[in-house]
Amino acid sequence: MRSGAKLAIVGGAFLVVASGVGYGGYNLWNGVTGGSPSRNEGEQRQTGPVTSEEVTGTAKDFLAAWASGEPERAAQLTNNPVEAGPALLAYREGAMIASADIVPGSPEGATVPFTVRATVSYEGHTKAWSYVSKLTVVRGLTTGRPLVDWKPTVVHPKLSKGATLRTGDAKAAALAVLGRGGVELTQEKYPSLGPILDELRKRYGTRVGGEPGIETWIDSGSEEVADTTLLTLSEGVKGRLETTIDPAVQTAAEQAVKRYRNASVVAVQPSTGAIRAVANSPAGGNNTAFLGRLAPGSTLKIVTAALLLEKGLVTADGPAECPKSAMYYGRTFQNLDGFELGTVPFRRSFARSCNTAFIKKIDDVHDDAALGKEAREVFGIDKEWKTGIASFDGRIPAEAGGEAAAQYIGQGTVQMNPLTVASITATAKAGAFKQPYLISPGLDDRAVATADRPLNKAVARQLRDMMRDTATSGTAAKAMTSVGGDKGAKTGSAEVDGQTDPNSWFAGFSDDLAAAAVVLSGGHGGDTAGQVVSQVLRRR
Image 1 (cartoon, rainbow, N blue to C red):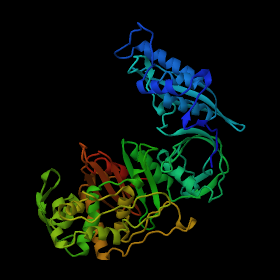
Image 2 (tube, helix red, strand yellow; image 1 turned 180 degrees about the vertical axis):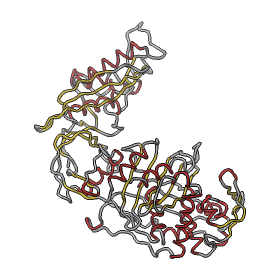
Image 3 (tube, helix red, strand yellow; image 1 turned 135 degrees about the vertical axis):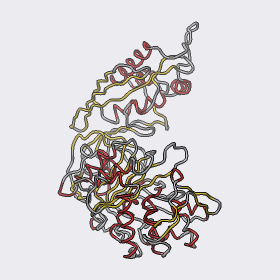
Image 4 (cartoon, rainbow, N blue to C red; image 1 turned 60 degrees about the vertical axis):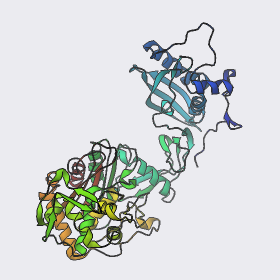
């Protein structure tokens, strides 16, 4: 376990006695009202926006008090000293800051950026630590004094409410995480792997011979939220953990997602289930690629088409209606921009992503729960995957009427993420489900999920052919133009309440690599998510 300096807690209240000031009545009043409880008679209360002089002076005084190790004085210069005082004391005593030089930058309105150059010292280990943060000056609600608007991010940009800075023995053992070919996977080289590397370290560090080092970290204060390492004073002894990540594919994935504000992608090897890449933007944020619960739009038509083919309700070359709209249990469904194809081979409706061609077949299925069964029995969805880290393996809950129809085109209550859609694509390519995994199941004797049955061979062949058509002459053609090899794809877009643009989805394969991506508010599938997937598939 990590161990570091402990802060004194007296009767559940934080107490500072330096300069004779206690965080009791005075600071409590100050924190609630945003100012001092009293003013000299005749002193005029200031109103209106803070002036540039007030911004500069308040920031300078606050940063000087903080840097000199006077948390009680610095706290009094904020609009919430009850929270600011303990946080600033914890900065010095919890994070073991031996000294700090805090230099303000040029104000931008009421906001002042600043650079912290600190020295951390713990049990004979000393290291320099530098980072940039910012503060904003506001006017106190009661007194009108200029005060620092207190937020935990003032102390460090990654600090959140309830979290604390600590320096001590690391909770988890040191670990070198390796990709294929023995290449070490570091956060510096692969930024979006940061949270995953932290999780792997906690799960497997000691199992593979690692020993803890000494670190400065953000203690989240919650078992459900991972701590964040900020500085390593001593490495400890690194264990070595092999993963299935392919550095070349991972590099392509990292580069692809960072072009968009919120994007995630996963690449899987169809023949084995080995995960070759996982990337998210923003880097270091939520692992939407593995944990997202989003409607996947028309990429789910891979599963719906498999269901209709297996039930003999369609064939790739057989006729299927694609009208402008179709109704099911009083709910009307339309195609993008209201297009219609008439009666055409089903493969053409698949390639053009015709919603109504799928909706028209629901009555013939005679089972509202059939889509969920197909996803589970053939594609391994909702089978309690054990990838080596936390993951969500998809869900298609039982629905009826119009809500069941929405599921057929990947809307409504369907929940997927790039991991599950990449696996669906891999299953279509290989003809059988292989549970995706990041760490070899043999390392910790994990039981991987299995499907009840493979795809019917004739169905698998038709499904792959329709995906190939989509990649060469359908909605995915533009994105897949530069992808070589045996290739296939499916586009998707999912409408989300409150969003102007739908989420963009794209799934594709090239030879023995399948990938899926989502770009939140990214528009239509081929426009944004398609660019992410094609870049990953072009990793060569």
